[in-house]
Image (cartoon, rainbow, N blue to C red; front, side, top):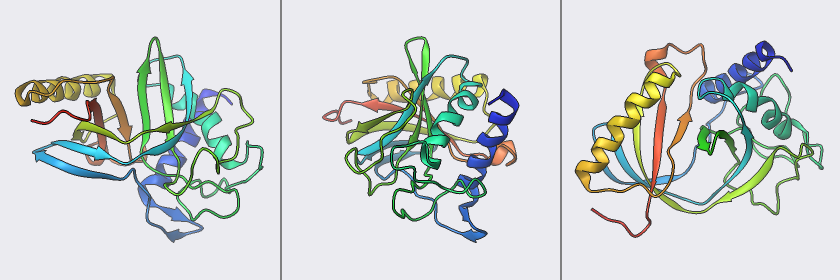
Length: 215
């Protein structure tokens, strides 16, 4: 898959996340479940429920690894698994689980792992490592993410290195003022299609906290 095609497919799946359309019918897009402990403007402290993600490690810059990772991850939920469950290419979006079909969910996550990036698709909440089909692409792995406490900043804007670094710096300043210390690396989360106006796009940066830490 060349970069241009990968970019187009990545846009299609994020378009599905933005509009929640299946077969021309509006559907509710499933998102990662969490409760809010504290809100201060664009900043929140959240408690997330356990999740399962499909993940791939890729090389590249923050701005281009999404395109590189999308193909293998999307092929997995479209049928590149031992059960050969498929989701039609015309609707790579949220839908009810049917047989071995896997619903598309939000957000698409991205975080640094050494010199590489881990890009993830969140699996539907009613799935487990035991019930999800095994990927046929050995680069794709399924991983259980335990319940976690995070601090988050939400912002609108283009998917750029500058925007990410600017808002991450603001988040770290807010954490410092609140007496909160990071317990891991930041995760970049994107919710919208690339053709959505940049000033309306929903982006978030999440930084994990120690579970027992309170301010």
